Image 1 (cartoon, rainbow, N blue to C red):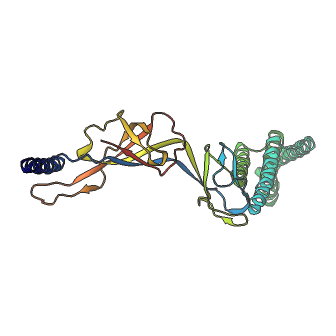
Image 2: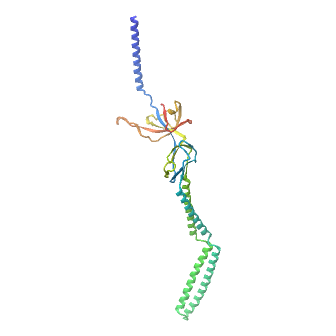
Image 3: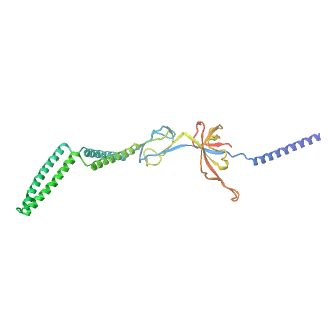
Length: 329
Protein backbone atom coordinates (compact mmCIF):
# COMPACT_ATOMS: atom_id res chain seq x y z
CA UNK A 1 0.00 0.00 0.00
CA UNK A 2 2.75 2.36 0.95
CA UNK A 3 4.58 1.42 -2.25
CA UNK A 4 1.58 2.32 -4.36
CA UNK A 5 1.29 5.68 -2.66
CA UNK A 6 4.98 6.33 -3.28
CA UNK A 7 4.57 5.38 -6.94
CA UNK A 8 1.60 7.71 -7.31
CA UNK A 9 3.51 10.50 -5.69
CA UNK A 10 6.45 9.92 -7.97
CA UNK A 11 4.18 9.92 -11.03
CA UNK A 12 2.57 13.17 -9.96
CA UNK A 13 5.92 14.79 -9.39
CA UNK A 14 7.14 13.56 -12.74
CA UNK A 15 4.03 14.82 -14.51
CA UNK A 16 4.37 18.18 -12.80
CA UNK A 17 8.00 18.38 -13.82
CA UNK A 18 7.05 17.58 -17.43
CA UNK A 19 4.39 20.31 -17.41
CA UNK A 20 6.88 22.82 -16.06
CA UNK A 21 9.46 21.82 -18.64
CA UNK A 22 6.85 21.99 -21.41
CA UNK A 23 5.71 25.42 -20.28
CA UNK A 24 9.28 26.67 -20.14
CA UNK A 25 9.95 25.20 -23.57
CA UNK A 26 6.82 26.75 -25.00
CA UNK A 27 7.75 30.08 -23.49
CA UNK A 28 11.25 29.86 -24.92
CA UNK A 29 9.87 28.90 -28.35
CA UNK A 30 7.34 31.71 -28.33
CA UNK A 31 10.06 34.08 -27.25
CA UNK A 32 12.18 32.99 -30.16
CA UNK A 33 9.17 32.97 -32.56
CA UNK A 34 6.89 35.84 -31.52
CA UNK A 35 3.46 36.22 -33.13
CA UNK A 36 3.80 38.73 -35.97
CA UNK A 37 2.24 42.07 -35.14
CA UNK A 38 -0.75 42.80 -37.39
CA UNK A 39 -1.05 45.79 -39.69
CA UNK A 40 -3.31 48.48 -38.27
CA UNK A 41 -5.08 50.85 -40.62
CA UNK A 42 -8.02 53.23 -40.84
CA UNK A 43 -10.84 53.72 -43.33
CA UNK A 44 -10.80 56.96 -45.29
CA UNK A 45 -13.16 58.37 -47.92
CA UNK A 46 -13.24 61.06 -50.60
CA UNK A 47 -14.13 64.31 -48.83
CA UNK A 48 -14.90 67.69 -50.41
CA UNK A 49 -15.07 71.01 -48.55
CA UNK A 50 -17.65 73.34 -50.12
CA UNK A 51 -17.21 77.12 -50.23
CA UNK A 52 -18.62 80.02 -52.25
CA UNK A 53 -16.85 82.46 -54.58
CA UNK A 54 -18.66 85.46 -53.08
CA UNK A 55 -19.33 86.68 -49.56
CA UNK A 56 -22.99 86.77 -48.55
CA UNK A 57 -25.50 86.26 -45.77
CA UNK A 58 -26.87 82.74 -45.32
CA UNK A 59 -30.49 82.92 -46.44
CA UNK A 60 -31.46 79.26 -46.13
CA UNK A 61 -30.03 75.79 -45.46
CA UNK A 62 -32.05 73.28 -47.55
CA UNK A 63 -30.05 70.30 -46.19
CA UNK A 64 -29.07 68.92 -42.79
CA UNK A 65 -26.06 66.97 -41.56
CA UNK A 66 -26.28 63.28 -42.42
CA UNK A 67 -28.48 63.90 -45.48
CA UNK A 68 -27.68 62.24 -48.80
CA UNK A 69 -27.31 64.73 -51.66
CA UNK A 70 -26.94 64.49 -55.43
CA UNK A 71 -24.57 66.28 -57.78
CA UNK A 72 -25.82 69.83 -58.31
CA UNK A 73 -28.17 69.83 -55.31
CA UNK A 74 -28.37 73.14 -53.46
CA UNK A 75 -26.68 73.05 -50.06
CA UNK A 76 -26.77 76.72 -49.03
CA UNK A 77 -28.67 79.77 -50.31
CA UNK A 78 -26.96 83.15 -49.96
CA UNK A 79 -28.31 86.69 -50.07
CA UNK A 80 -25.97 88.94 -52.08
CA UNK A 81 -27.79 92.26 -52.79
CA UNK A 82 -24.56 94.18 -53.41
CA UNK A 83 -23.51 91.83 -56.20
CA UNK A 84 -26.98 91.88 -57.75
CA UNK A 85 -26.90 95.70 -57.75
CA UNK A 86 -23.49 95.58 -59.43
CA UNK A 87 -24.98 93.33 -62.11
CA UNK A 88 -27.58 95.98 -62.97
CA UNK A 89 -24.82 98.59 -63.22
CA UNK A 90 -22.65 96.59 -65.62
CA UNK A 91 -25.70 95.63 -67.70
CA UNK A 92 -26.45 99.36 -68.17
CA UNK A 93 -22.84 99.96 -69.23
CA UNK A 94 -23.11 97.11 -71.72
CA UNK A 95 -26.29 98.59 -73.22
CA UNK A 96 -24.59 101.98 -73.68
CA UNK A 97 -21.48 100.39 -75.22
CA UNK A 98 -23.58 98.30 -77.62
CA UNK A 99 -25.51 101.40 -78.71
CA UNK A 100 -22.27 103.30 -79.38
CA UNK A 101 -20.84 100.40 -81.35
CA UNK A 102 -23.97 100.11 -83.46
CA UNK A 103 -23.99 103.86 -84.16
CA UNK A 104 -20.37 103.79 -85.28
CA UNK A 105 -21.01 100.77 -87.50
CA UNK A 106 -24.17 102.22 -89.06
CA UNK A 107 -22.70 105.67 -89.76
CA UNK A 108 -24.65 108.91 -90.30
CA UNK A 109 -28.31 109.07 -91.24
CA UNK A 110 -29.23 109.67 -94.93
CA UNK A 111 -30.17 113.33 -94.39
CA UNK A 112 -26.81 113.92 -92.70
CA UNK A 113 -25.02 112.38 -95.69
CA UNK A 114 -26.95 114.66 -98.12
CA UNK A 115 -26.15 117.75 -96.04
CA UNK A 116 -22.45 116.87 -96.02
CA UNK A 117 -22.50 116.37 -99.78
CA UNK A 118 -24.13 119.77 -100.32
CA UNK A 119 -21.53 121.42 -98.09
CA UNK A 120 -18.78 119.75 -100.11
CA UNK A 121 -20.25 120.97 -103.41
CA UNK A 122 -20.47 124.52 -102.10
CA UNK A 123 -16.87 124.34 -100.92
CA UNK A 124 -15.82 122.99 -104.31
CA UNK A 125 -17.55 125.86 -106.11
CA UNK A 126 -15.92 128.36 -103.79
CA UNK A 127 -12.50 126.78 -104.35
CA UNK A 128 -13.00 126.93 -108.15
CA UNK A 129 -13.93 130.61 -108.02
CA UNK A 130 -11.04 131.44 -105.67
CA UNK A 131 -8.56 129.60 -107.91
CA UNK A 132 -9.76 131.45 -111.03
CA UNK A 133 -9.62 134.78 -109.20
CA UNK A 134 -6.11 134.08 -107.97
CA UNK A 135 -4.92 133.18 -111.49
CA UNK A 136 -6.22 136.50 -112.91
CA UNK A 137 -4.81 138.55 -110.00
CA UNK A 138 -1.46 136.79 -110.29
CA UNK A 139 -1.26 137.66 -114.01
CA UNK A 140 -2.12 141.30 -113.36
CA UNK A 141 0.38 141.49 -110.48
CA UNK A 142 3.07 140.06 -112.71
CA UNK A 143 2.44 142.82 -115.21
CA UNK A 144 2.53 145.40 -112.42
CA UNK A 145 -1.08 146.44 -112.88
CA UNK A 146 -2.22 145.76 -109.27
CA UNK A 147 -0.72 146.14 -105.83
CA UNK A 148 0.99 143.49 -103.72
CA UNK A 149 -1.87 143.68 -101.20
CA UNK A 150 -4.45 142.64 -103.80
CA UNK A 151 -2.25 139.70 -104.78
CA UNK A 152 -1.81 138.58 -101.16
CA UNK A 153 -5.56 138.81 -100.54
CA UNK A 154 -6.34 136.62 -103.58
CA UNK A 155 -3.67 134.07 -102.56
CA UNK A 156 -4.97 133.84 -98.98
CA UNK A 157 -8.55 133.42 -100.21
CA UNK A 158 -7.48 130.67 -102.59
CA UNK A 159 -5.58 128.76 -99.86
CA UNK A 160 -8.51 129.10 -97.43
CA UNK A 161 -10.96 127.80 -100.02
CA UNK A 162 -8.72 124.78 -100.64
CA UNK A 163 -8.64 123.93 -96.92
CA UNK A 164 -12.42 124.32 -96.66
CA UNK A 165 -12.85 121.96 -99.61
CA UNK A 166 -10.57 119.36 -97.99
CA UNK A 167 -12.50 119.50 -94.72
CA UNK A 168 -15.87 119.32 -96.45
CA UNK A 169 -14.70 116.37 -98.53
CA UNK A 170 -13.48 114.52 -95.43
CA UNK A 171 -16.76 115.14 -93.61
CA UNK A 172 -18.70 113.86 -96.59
CA UNK A 173 -16.55 110.71 -96.78
CA UNK A 174 -17.01 110.03 -93.05
CA UNK A 175 -20.76 110.56 -93.32
CA UNK A 176 -20.93 108.34 -96.40
CA UNK A 177 -18.64 105.50 -95.28
CA UNK A 178 -18.97 105.74 -91.48
CA UNK A 179 -16.23 106.05 -88.88
CA UNK A 180 -12.66 105.03 -89.46
CA UNK A 181 -11.66 101.44 -88.87
CA UNK A 182 -9.75 102.46 -85.73
CA UNK A 183 -12.85 104.10 -84.28
CA UNK A 184 -14.95 101.05 -85.12
CA UNK A 185 -12.38 98.74 -83.52
CA UNK A 186 -12.31 100.86 -80.37
CA UNK A 187 -16.11 100.87 -80.11
CA UNK A 188 -16.29 97.10 -80.60
CA UNK A 189 -13.59 96.54 -77.96
CA UNK A 190 -15.54 98.73 -75.53
CA UNK A 191 -18.67 96.66 -76.13
CA UNK A 192 -16.77 93.41 -75.62
CA UNK A 193 -15.25 94.74 -72.41
CA UNK A 194 -18.70 95.62 -71.12
CA UNK A 195 -19.95 92.14 -72.03
CA UNK A 196 -17.04 90.59 -70.11
CA UNK A 197 -17.94 92.65 -67.05
CA UNK A 198 -21.53 91.41 -67.20
CA UNK A 199 -20.42 87.78 -67.51
CA UNK A 200 -18.03 88.16 -64.59
CA UNK A 201 -20.62 89.63 -62.25
CA UNK A 202 -23.27 87.19 -63.49
CA UNK A 203 -20.98 84.30 -62.52
CA UNK A 204 -20.84 85.69 -58.97
CA UNK A 205 -24.61 86.09 -58.84
CA UNK A 206 -24.93 82.43 -59.86
CA UNK A 207 -22.92 81.55 -56.74
CA UNK A 208 -25.73 82.62 -54.44
CA UNK A 209 -26.91 79.00 -54.58
CA UNK A 210 -24.01 76.88 -53.32
CA UNK A 211 -24.34 73.42 -54.87
CA UNK A 212 -22.70 70.06 -54.22
CA UNK A 213 -20.07 69.06 -56.82
CA UNK A 214 -20.37 65.37 -55.88
CA UNK A 215 -22.96 62.90 -54.69
CA UNK A 216 -22.50 61.90 -51.06
CA UNK A 217 -23.50 62.57 -47.49
CA UNK A 218 -23.45 65.93 -45.72
CA UNK A 219 -20.83 65.39 -43.04
CA UNK A 220 -20.68 68.91 -41.57
CA UNK A 221 -22.40 72.28 -41.93
CA UNK A 222 -20.26 75.14 -40.64
CA UNK A 223 -22.79 77.99 -41.01
CA UNK A 224 -26.22 78.90 -39.69
CA UNK A 225 -29.03 80.96 -41.20
CA UNK A 226 -28.40 84.68 -40.84
CA UNK A 227 -24.62 84.38 -40.57
CA UNK A 228 -22.20 86.09 -42.96
CA UNK A 229 -20.34 83.44 -44.98
CA UNK A 230 -16.98 84.62 -46.29
CA UNK A 231 -15.83 83.71 -49.80
CA UNK A 232 -13.40 80.80 -49.93
CA UNK A 233 -14.12 79.62 -46.37
CA UNK A 234 -15.59 76.07 -46.13
CA UNK A 235 -19.29 76.12 -45.36
CA UNK A 236 -20.03 72.39 -45.67
CA UNK A 237 -18.27 69.03 -46.07
CA UNK A 238 -19.52 66.24 -48.33
CA UNK A 239 -18.28 62.64 -47.95
CA UNK A 240 -18.55 60.16 -50.83
CA UNK A 241 -19.18 56.81 -49.09
CA UNK A 242 -18.91 54.95 -52.41
CA UNK A 243 -15.23 55.92 -52.62
CA UNK A 244 -13.54 54.51 -49.49
CA UNK A 245 -10.20 52.86 -48.80
CA UNK A 246 -7.98 51.72 -45.94
CA UNK A 247 -4.69 53.46 -45.20
CA UNK A 248 -1.82 51.67 -43.45
CA UNK A 249 1.64 52.83 -42.37
CA UNK A 250 3.78 49.70 -42.72
CA UNK A 251 7.33 49.36 -41.48
CA UNK A 252 9.86 48.80 -44.25
CA UNK A 253 11.00 45.40 -42.95
CA UNK A 254 7.40 44.17 -43.32
CA UNK A 255 7.01 45.29 -46.94
CA UNK A 256 8.22 42.07 -48.62
CA UNK A 257 4.73 40.73 -49.29
CA UNK A 258 3.00 44.08 -49.65
CA UNK A 259 2.93 44.92 -53.35
CA UNK A 260 0.43 46.54 -55.69
CA UNK A 261 -2.37 44.10 -56.42
CA UNK A 262 -1.82 42.09 -53.24
CA UNK A 263 -4.93 40.98 -51.35
CA UNK A 264 -4.98 41.75 -47.63
CA UNK A 265 -7.28 39.75 -45.35
CA UNK A 266 -8.66 42.27 -42.89
CA UNK A 267 -11.11 42.54 -40.03
CA UNK A 268 -13.07 45.65 -39.12
CA UNK A 269 -13.85 45.50 -35.38
CA UNK A 270 -16.79 47.87 -35.75
CA UNK A 271 -18.47 45.40 -38.14
CA UNK A 272 -17.82 42.16 -36.23
CA UNK A 273 -15.49 39.19 -36.81
CA UNK A 274 -16.04 38.82 -40.54
CA UNK A 275 -12.93 38.93 -42.74
CA UNK A 276 -12.90 41.25 -45.78
CA UNK A 277 -10.59 41.35 -48.80
CA UNK A 278 -8.73 44.58 -49.53
CA UNK A 279 -6.65 45.05 -52.69
CA UNK A 280 -3.52 47.20 -52.53
CA UNK A 281 -3.64 49.94 -55.19
CA UNK A 282 -1.14 52.52 -53.90
CA UNK A 283 2.26 52.41 -52.18
CA UNK A 284 3.88 55.73 -51.48
CA UNK A 285 7.17 55.85 -53.43
CA UNK A 286 8.80 57.75 -50.56
CA UNK A 287 9.23 56.52 -47.01
CA UNK A 288 7.62 58.42 -44.17
CA UNK A 289 8.58 58.81 -40.51
CA UNK A 290 10.60 56.23 -38.55
CA UNK A 291 8.66 54.00 -36.14
CA UNK A 292 11.69 52.16 -34.72
CA UNK A 293 15.07 53.70 -34.02
CA UNK A 294 18.36 51.90 -33.63
CA UNK A 295 19.69 51.65 -30.08
CA UNK A 296 23.29 51.51 -31.29
CA UNK A 297 24.31 53.81 -34.09
CA UNK A 298 27.32 51.66 -34.95
CA UNK A 299 25.37 48.49 -35.78
CA UNK A 300 21.69 49.43 -36.20
CA UNK A 301 19.58 51.66 -38.44
CA UNK A 302 16.22 53.41 -38.21
CA UNK A 303 13.23 51.60 -39.69
CA UNK A 304 10.91 53.85 -41.65
CA UNK A 305 7.33 53.37 -42.79
CA UNK A 306 5.54 53.44 -46.13
CA UNK A 307 1.98 54.59 -46.66
CA UNK A 308 -0.10 51.83 -48.25
CA UNK A 309 -3.68 52.15 -49.48
CA UNK A 310 -6.07 49.30 -50.25
CA UNK A 311 -9.67 49.28 -51.45
CA UNK A 312 -12.37 46.75 -50.54
CA UNK A 313 -12.70 44.14 -53.27
CA UNK A 314 -16.47 44.10 -52.69
CA UNK A 315 -18.68 46.86 -51.26
CA UNK A 316 -18.90 46.65 -47.45
CA UNK A 317 -22.20 47.50 -45.82
CA UNK A 318 -22.12 50.19 -43.11
CA UNK A 319 -18.45 50.98 -43.72
CA UNK A 320 -17.62 54.47 -42.46
CA UNK A 321 -14.52 56.67 -42.48
CA UNK A 322 -12.49 56.40 -39.30
CA UNK A 323 -13.17 52.71 -38.66
CA UNK A 324 -10.15 50.62 -37.69
CA UNK A 325 -8.85 47.91 -40.02
CA UNK A 326 -6.69 45.02 -38.77
CA UNK A 327 -4.71 42.74 -41.09
CA UNK A 328 -3.28 39.59 -39.49
CA UNK A 329 0.16 38.52 -40.66
